[in-house]
Length: 142
Image 1 (spheres, helix red, strand yellow):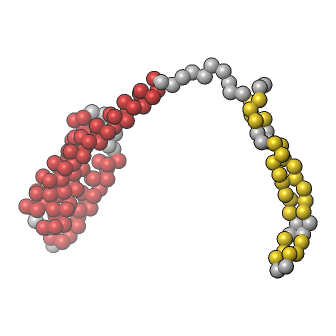
Image 2: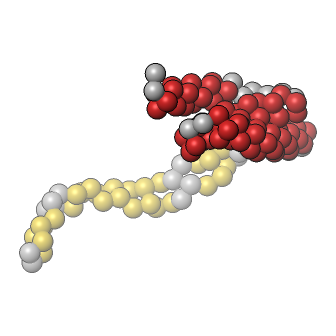
Image 3: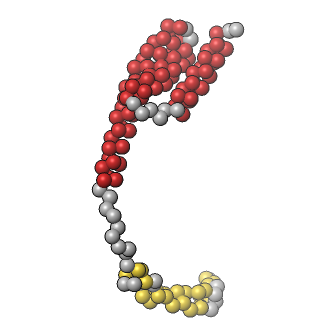
């Protein structure tokens, strides 16, 4: 096998593993978020290192940098998720019960009439139905 084929195979494998890790990222704990971030970042960094240098040294440097960056991003994502959950929990606690139903909304009243076709200079207006709102919708009691 030539090295170009191995690089392509490695890149495809890394891309597949990264995709799988991304799809299954429902992390519940801080440690899982950090490990998943390190895994995704490391696999991505390895792919970039292989593409750039096409040797083991470049791949290892990419792995290290990617793992560090991925860990940081995993921790940030976990913090963001915790913040959103806290806000939702606080909002749920402030929800008020509806004691009564809202009043009815009386429908608007409209009148319509037909307008015959007409020619005005170079413009032709076909038969139309024109409507006018006579009374807007209003709140009412039942």
